[in-house]
Amino acid sequence: MRLMMALGAALLVGCPGGDDLEAACVEPPADLAVPFRDLNGVVAHWALSEGCIQTSYAPDMKDAREEFEAALAAWGEQTCSDLCFSAPVESTVPVDDSSQRRVHLVSGRPPGTEGSKVQTALTFQMSTGRILQSVIYVNTAEPGEVTRGDWLMGVGKALGMGTPAAGVDSVMSREQPQPRTALTGKDLETFCRLYGRPTFCGN
Image (tube, rainbow, N blue to C red):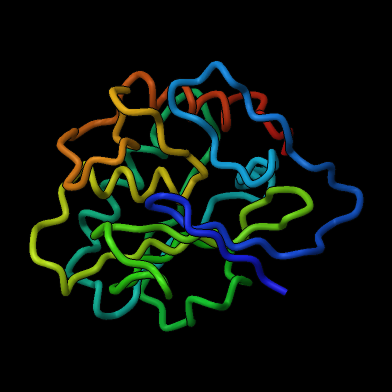
């Protein structure tokens, strides 16, 4: 059984099961301008104890590799955290295969959605919040460029960053195309709270 929910420019796909010994990551902090992404109070997050997150792209997104890699680097270079990414590789593994533990880039849009040019779908364990896979969709059929800010937002969603309220200075805002070209202090405050030392979820 899989649960899919459309939440702004991101989707959450919950999968039951998981390690019974792993505690759920719950009670996201209320004091952050950029919230954690959560479903019913369970925080979506990558387990850093499993090593660097694999990254890949579909063959028809090969020309976007440079922008994708630059956005990954912007999040991965933060000194507050041990989060890291592998170098992106081309992959034909289907998007519904969540066994890869990866951030994967494809063209199109998630099934049953419309609107934003860049959207992200997260597959995670409903019992713990551990992310199993994130897929960034770029609707290449829609006119207009994908800005650096759009790429930063897509990767941020893939990491479990949520959407802030209107008026917050953040690449995670609902604006598309996203006018910001760099992560803001509000973005980094949330990222470092989620993935700093120690991580918010303890894994």
